[in-house]
Image (cartoon, rainbow, N blue to C red; front, side, top):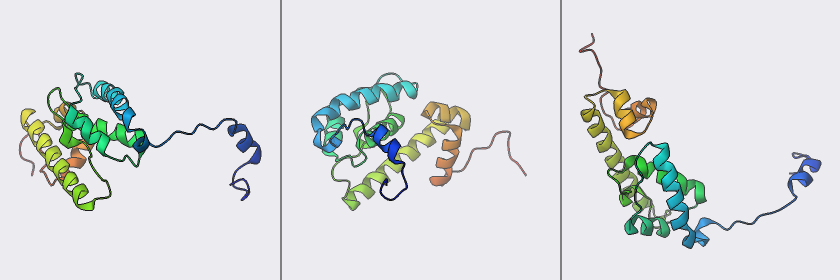
Length: 165
């Protein structure tokens, strides 16, 4: 970019003081357990949930995945699984597994996750008597996200105050 004139040469030399080479997560699979454990603690705290356990099955799924998005993708996957899991154990089925390039497996996983998420939303709305704000809090998501998911999963939006004309 410096040679093309799109980046200042003086700034490049200031920033180029030290280079740290960090191999991709798929080349450091032995670190996934430690990283995932830390991310799980953080995700539970952010979702205001009690700490959850990472089972051997969940860890196996994490270690079998290639993580093209590296630690950022792992973080997002764990945060999503925390929101989708019930109880005090991270649901392994809410985590990616295997070869992400396998379109059929990826489609199945996306469909399974969507069905699971849809069911959790229905249950939360039932538990909260249709109150979207309370259901969103129970799920650990914003009300706006809940409303978006209702549209995405073609679920009717509960309305308060009786029938509207």
